[in-house]
Image (cartoon, rainbow, N blue to C red; front, side, top):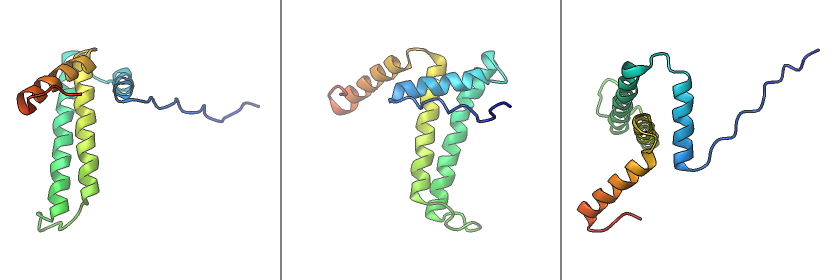
Length: 119
C-alpha cells in the first residue's frame, strides 16, 4: 500500500526579490514558448495586468452603465499589486540583476524627482 498523500508545498520565499526570483523560476520552468517569442509574451503579460487594473477602476467607479459598480477599491489594489509583480518578473526575465537594475533606476528617479537618493 502506497501513501497517496501529496508532498507538502515548498515554503514560500520571504522577501521581495527572493519571491520575484522564485516566481520567475516557476514561470520559466513551465514556459510553453521560449526564446524571443516567449520573452515578448512575458512582456505582453504586463499589458494584460494593466488592463485588468483599468477594468477594476472603471468597475469601482461605476463608469460602465451596463455593469454598474462591479469592483471594489480593494480589487483595484489587488490589480495594481499584480501589475507591480508582473513588471518585476518581466524585469527579472530580462536580467538576473533585476534587483540592482531596479535599485539604480529608483535612485535616479528619486534624485530627479525629490532631489535625494532613495533609501
